[in-house]
Amino acid sequence: MPVAWLPVGPGRWAAPYGIGQSLLFIPFDAAGAFLEHISPPSWQERIGWFPIGLGLLPLLGVGLWLVMRRVLEAEGLEPRLAVVGSCAVVFGTIMFHYLGQGQEEMLVGLCLISSVLYALRLRAAPTTRNALASAAFAGACLVIRPVSVFSLLIVPVLLWSASKDRVTRIRILATAGLVVLLSIGVMLWYNFARFGSPFTIGYDRLGHVSKFAFDRRSPGILVSLLLGPGFGLLVLSPLLVVTFSGLGPLWRRDRSYLVGMTASVVSCYLFFSCWHDSYNGGVAWGTRYQCHLLPLYALPLALGIRRLSAGRWRRVLLVVAALSASIQVLSVAVTHHLEYVEAACQDGHAGGEELFQGFTKGQLGRRIRNVVRWVHRAGPPPCDDPKGRELIAVVWDRYVPNFWGPVIAHRIVRGGRLLMALWATLAAAALGALWIGGRGSSGSARVPRKPT
Image 1 (cartoon, rainbow, N blue to C red):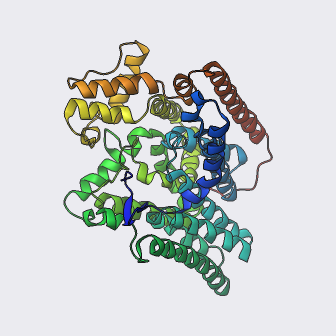
Image 2: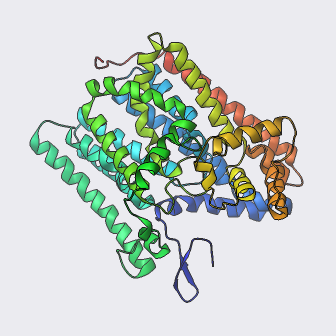
Image 3: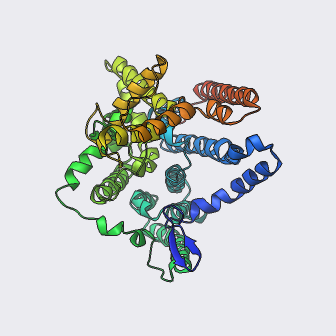
């Protein structure tokens, strides 16, 4: 039986997840199959991932950065601050880690912030086209990941604020509602095609829904998702603390955005604090299930950066930004599986519970020690269990460091140097593009902005 798949008939299996990301993957998977077909045998094991790893994922990263920047500019921020704010989210939060992963959260995040962008554009141009675009991206979030419905609460708030005219508001909401209903229809059809019932979502077939409950565990989980010393969002992305400094200016600038963002964030975190099956995202780095909300923080984060950089907190801001960026580098330096294998071997908890309960045994503490061990060539962390020690040794040998160039070159018998050269060239080109784009934006004419 395939892992996490469900039997739906004799010899038939179905995935319990949404169909959206699978549809997006089709052309990239087809390109990967073609590369496997024409490649030498020593390359075939890994080259099938190249179209997704070197094509789709970078495009998602660029798309997220660009749309966040457009949202900040639509809110009246000057181009330079828009660049700084979008870069702060990409390079200063756990988004940096997940832009290199094939999970669906970043795709949901891109559709979410794109829906927000077109909702904001309705204020300047309350056209049917913008309403349709905002609703289409919102519907895509549902088709990709149905539980993202909580994060979409900001969209109707922004749609309602698009115009003061009552008739225009009703027209915008009705247009958007029809498109979202069409997306829901696709979801129901997909459920019926898989399970014979439009209201069977897949997770209930896995037994996950039965583990949803608001009980005495929920408040502790809610706090740990944000502040847990082992994996909390603000621990692994300390730069996000600056968003609190931007809430006041955001309230004065755009109350609808703040109200909608609060509704999205609070409802999402309340839901996952009650879902006791896997509130953080399974075997993951930090809180994966909530990282699709990260693009929404770009606006308050940018406003907070501007506020703190103009006062005596400037040096503190630079220290926090440097610390946060360093943590993001640590997050990709080693595969996130290592700490789970290490915890299972040393503490006997295969689910990684020890990673959530403290800094010393948490993900960040273990990651710092493992990177230090690698720098000093001390070898993998100790393990008394022979099988666990063997598994840790394999992970350490193949995925430390975890940058795709060395990893792929290690796994391919011939052509490793060529791949390393290609990886270095792409990395240099990416850094150069960021530098050129930043310089061009800093020299751009400033757009009018609302007073803060």
